[in-house]
Length: 146
Image 1 (tube, rainbow, N blue to C red):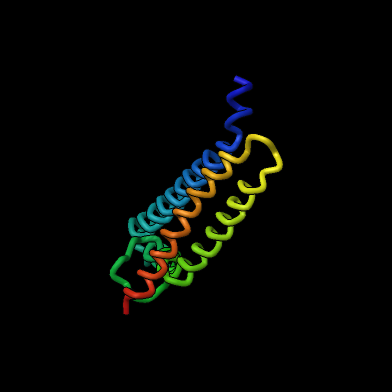
Image 2: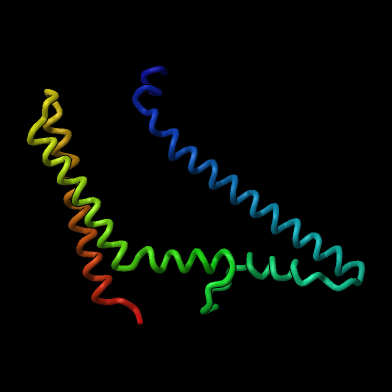
C-alpha cells in the first residue's frame, strides 16, 4: 500500500478537484432550493415576492437564448468564447512548443543516466500537442465567427 501512495501521489490533485467541484454543485443546489422554498412561502402567504429573489432565480436559470452577458452563466459563456479564440490558441501553441523544446534539449543533454528515453517521449508528445494547438489557432483565426 505504501508503494501505491508513493507512486501515485499526484492523484490527490484531480481527486481533490472532483471533490471540490461536487461540493460547489451541492452548495449551488442547496442555495437554489432554499430560494425556491422562500418564494413558495411568499406565494402561499399571498405576499408579493421580492424582486431580488426573482432576479436570483433568473440568474441561476440556464438561459441560452440571451445575447447579453449578465449573471454568472453569462460571464462563463463570455470567458469560454474568448478562451477558445485565436489569441489563446496561439498562446497555448507557444507555451507548449517552448516546453517541448526544453524537453528536447533535456533529452539531448541528459546529465542523469536513464532519462534520455522518457524525456524524448515527453518531447514528442508535447511537440504533437504544440502542432495541434498551432493548427487550431490558424483555423480559429481563419474561421472566426462574426
